[in-house]
Structures are given as structure tokens and as C-alpha cells.
Length: 319
Length: 182
Image (cartoon, rainbow over all chains, first blue to last red; front, side, top):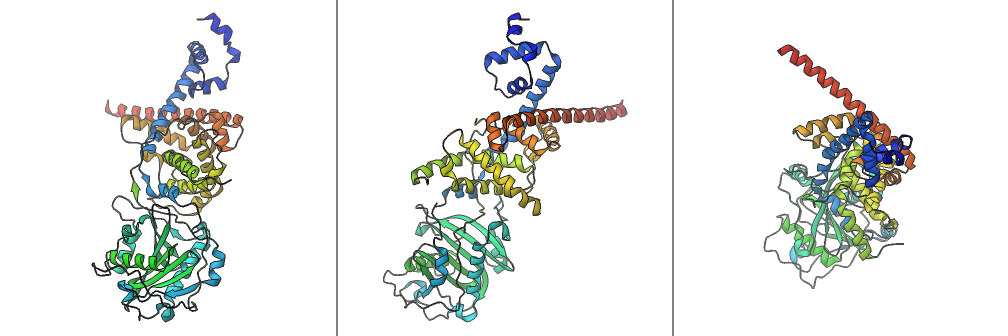
């Protein structure tokens, strides 16, 4: 049809590179027009090109809708994690952990300063913390972790699992009053020990974790507090559960958070006053009965649950 | 060299924009054999750790895809193969296709795609669906560009043959059905 084009694009120069580049839109306009003219004289090749174009179209139709699916919050949360290690210098922590008992000073905890030291009673909390430590020590692949993702009807919420365990309605404690919002929650299983891990973060990127495990305790709860530098664990038993809170906080903060958690879980009086600022601290004593947890910097949450409407992002192209 | 907090936030923002594409690519890689979000989460965690290595050369998407492909090859695939995947976790690509008329063609295409060798279909999808150039696909998969071209060619050829086969099969079925009615 066009001798000039035939001269520019003789048959022998056509090879598969032109074919695929045309199908994928990588030929410049002039070359594409030349190739199309060539196709007019080669119906078999044209049929092949049309099939390949159809393949591309169908594949895009099949896969593109997935770019509009809601993005789970846990994926976005990965990007919001503080870059700094939650547990720096963890190797040193185990050797010098000191247990302090938060006692007098108001708030719910202040009223129960004579409660029995539960870790010395039966070591359950110690075992629990060991579990936490063991879980954080091992690489994720070696752990028996049940990843749960909350679906539309919320059936997979680890707190539902907890609710079933203790036959009480369990919800994630609302720590908004202390500036924290929930980021991830997961049910972790190791050997026969199962517990729920909730991760909270504030706008500054500070993260705290709350662990909850079933354990019936009739006695009044006592808050126990372990601190090394700026890394702390506060833990207590309350009714059917053992709670452990980890993060970077001092005793006052731990007490406030624990009070808030207790109130939020419906375990404390609604009008519970917050602990006063002049909280009196019992002199610290060395923790002997509790095996010291060995925290690992790799302790990061691996699962979360909430769904978030995705941003509509044009996921095609990108080259 | 570590990024400053502001640089890190900026990179994180860019990465966040790519999550939907990463989820789609995870679906492509896994072919229904695991949770795409687990793979994406592993990818994001690695990307954050390695974010200082992104030199702002080329698109961040191709950088992320390369990470995801590496994660997939190195660890995830082994884990997925070893563990039992619950029915909830199974995310078959065909599930994305609705029952519209065009969806039926897509279903045929996806069915045919399942019969391709994985490294053939992966190249095809990187180019056809994600729109990467051959050079970018080569970087993502860490193979020479010539390999990308040959895999692409083979994938299209095989897919075409598969589609023709299913067309013939469907035609035969319809003929048999139609013959009974007439």
C-alpha cells in the first residue's frame, strides 16, 4: 500500500519485539502506524496481535478491580509505626529488671494497696510474661500465631474469642482519654497459652501494648510495675483476665492507663477518679519470683483487624 | 544512611499510595495460595526497613514490586506451601470477576492463566496489568530483559493456545446441546 513504508519497514525487520511492543503500547506513534500497515498485509499476524490485545484487556479487567478493594488498617498501620525500636537494649533489660508496686495515691489502685502480690502467689503473671517474652524472642515464622482479620460481621475479632472464654462482653479498652487509639489487635497462641495483644499508638507515634489472658482471680487486683530506663511493663489480674501493658511510660502513666483500661472494660466505677498526682510509691523491691522477660526489638505486631476504606488510587500504569 | 523523619514520612506517604497495587500484585503472585495481605504486610515492613535504599530513581512502585517479589520468593512462598490455608484465606483471582458478560471472558482468561508456568504469567501480568516496561519487569524479577521478552512471548503464545482450546471445548458443548434441541 505504501512503498515508502515498506522501504522504511521491510518485512525482514519485523520480529517479535515489534509485535509485543505494539501490543504493550511501547512503540512510538510513527513506528506503530508502520506496524499497523504491515499488519494489513499479514492477516495471520494481525489475528495474533488482536488476540494478544484481547488478552491484555481481559487481564486488566480481571485484576484492576482489586485496586479498589478496601485496604485493611493493619497495612496502613505498618507505615505509621514509629521507626525507633520499641524495646531498645533489650538484652540488658532482663538482668536488671526491678519490680515496683504502685500502691497508695488515689485512684482505684490506691484503694487496694494491700492486695496480695499475685506473682508471688502462683506465678501466673510471671508465666504469662514469659510467654510474651518467648513470643517476642522467636522469629515470626517459628511462632504459632493465628492471624485474625476482622471481617464485616466482626466474627474474627480476637476480643470475641476472649468474650467467649470468659463469658463476659469484651471490648478493646478506649484509651482516647490518654491520647491513644487502637492500631492492631491479635490473638496469639503459643503452646497451650493464648492471649490477646492490642497495640495502641498516639499521635506522637508512641506505642503501647496491652496483653490480656484468661485467668480467674477473685482477689482484688494489684498493679505491678516493672521499669528499665524508659521501657516498662505494668501488669495485673482483674477478674477473669490477666492484663499486661508494655511501652514507654512511667508509673503515674501506667496507673492512669490501667485505671482507664479497667474503667473502659467496665470493671471499675464509672465515676472513678484518676489517680492523684501525688501518688505515693512503695519502695521498689527486686523481682525474684517472676522470670524476667527477655524482650526483643523485633517485637512487632503482625496482624490487625480493622478495615478502612481505601483511597481510590489509579493502580494501573505506573511505569 | 538513615532518612530524616520528614523524609521517612514522605516515603511512607508514597508507599501508602501503592498499597492497592501491591495487594493486586500479591494476588497475582499467590494465585490463590495464601493471604495477599500477609504478603503485602511483609513487603511493607521490609520496605520501611529498607526505605533509605530507595534512590528516587524510577518509580517507587517498581521498587516496591521488586521487594514484594523478593519477599515472595525468599520466604512467603515456602511458608504458604507449608501451612494449611483456610478457606477464608484462599483468595482466588477468579473471585474478583463478577457474573457480567465480560466477566465470563475474564473467567476463561484466568482459568487459562492458571495453566501457565508461574514465571511466565508473572511477567505477562507485570507488563499487561501493571504497565511496567520490559526493563522494569526485568529489574523486579532480577532477570535479563531478554528473559522477560522470551517469557512474555511464551506466556502469550500459551495463553492464546489455552483460550483457543477452551473456545473449541465450549463450541463442542454448545453444538452437542443445540443438536439435542433441534
